[in-house]
Amino acid sequence: MNTQSTPLPFDEKVAASYEGKYLLVGLSYLDDNDKEIRRCELHGVIQSATREGILIALKGVHEGEKWNMPPLLGVIRAAKPGVYTLTTTNEKVVDPDLLAMWDIKKS
Image (cartoon, rainbow, N blue to C red; front, side, top):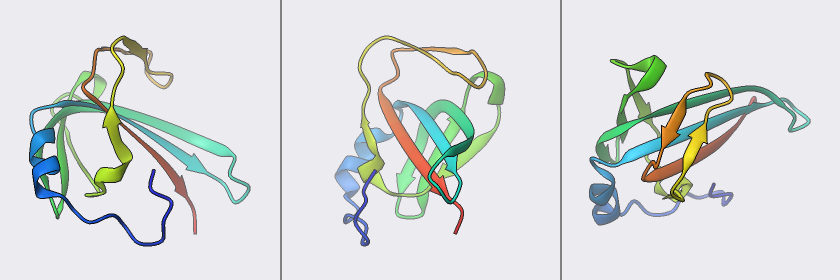
């Protein structure tokens, strides 16, 4: 994740290249001591990627739901091929295109 205080510029071409890709998202909720207190994992197809957000049509246990991720392209990276077993649901996600990992800290 981008740790700079100012976000990277939004790249329209990069964002457009993500549309239709399968994304696996990991959300770690941290306490004041940076200890993980909760984890959430989501996966699905990116429907749109704009300055307003990255809209994901969720699959698996969240099938039929949508999630709008903040438009920070710097947290997205290519996924290595393989089977990803989600610790929170025990789902298996095979060969996602992209990964996004977020650490969320209470302020």
